[in-house]
Length: 299
Image 1: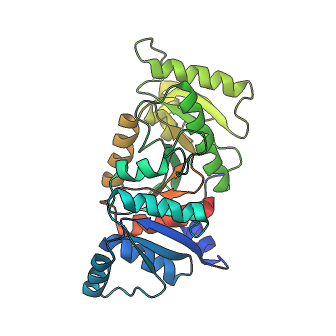
Image 2: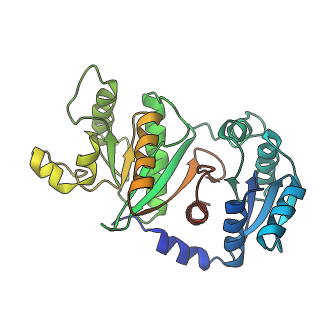
């Protein structure tokens, strides 16, 4: 069964009986205010905006964005991340959103051993990508946090991504372990890791999913690539999730798709106690709203 897409996520979010708290770190940004205004009007969230409150009010007034129903908390820079995380830990917010705050500043608050949101697992960004022309949907990880995950971290990223797939109504996601080639090469350690994880999956270590690798992007995405290369397997041409060997490969891939394909996407942090809407500060209103809808499914 394929992953549900953003249309379904919006429909389900629209059925939420009571809006939930959303703490936004670095909220003095037009796209942030527009996205949370839309999510509030749809009955999804109760925004808690953390930033310079005068700047938020000035921006809202200039752009004619109502702040009705919004709570404003005063904190800037790294402190905005600390305050937003505290709102989640207190229970006043069910999830967080990264606004105009740097990734290091937010992650410092999220990763704090005493006051942060750590679970003991590696923190990873999982992106839901929807290619409209081919009606394809798949998850990509880790696209934003872990620079060079070791084998144990790759396993945790895999498990977190599988949990997201399950939440998106895909009971047995097909997981591709990504590499530049499907051939094992001792000079490319990611191919060795992929073989090991596939074997461990075949032995039942990762229930609720099918794991195959190493696979290049064409083999994970396109069925005809498998036929041309004479490579089979349950994941070839049908990956529901792609686990990348490092941040460089993942980030370049996801941004190339974002900016060149007709697609919709949204992303969240996993490995934390509360979902964190975690996308680029350059992202659009629609991408932020997509990410909120995705996070609501994971609460």
